[in-house]
Length: 223
Image (tube, rainbow, N blue to C red; front, top):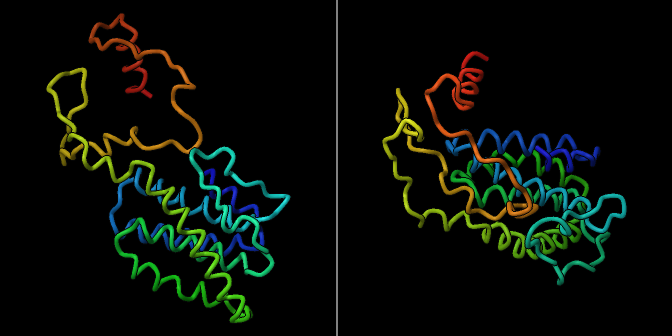
């Protein structure tokens, strides 16, 4: 995951982020979330972690200039970052962003208690309060951005209609599951619009052995 690699550049907190991500993995498995949903949760959580840990840093550039519709954070952009604990802020924001996108958030937060006890050790109470205030202000705009990506709107879209044709996808045995997230393409992209890219149309479906579709089908099958 590209966003995890960004955040892992902060070596001092790498172990903490590994623990946060492992706890999140366990929770998404427990909640039985599908792969597209899980990818969305990890992306938003790790972007937030990276952004906050690098807040005000010259070495670590914000992703805000390349992320689509990313908030400006005008109310907190110029605040003195030295008055908060960025390690605690990043971890807390990771937890709050991810917990807003899972089902068993109480169980998840309970599992993170030892991690936060370790992070908060040695931080003065005033600094903890200032940090938590910053986190609340950051989350207000950040979660609005997350929630505006079209994820919730996809539920109002028409269900995928299975059409009987050899050239189209149909549920397969033994489970005959419905398609996973057929409207995922309607969500806002992170970096750019699809119109910037072009691709060749797929080969026309055919059982004829001399057709390109059949040749590629056999290639995949035999591989």
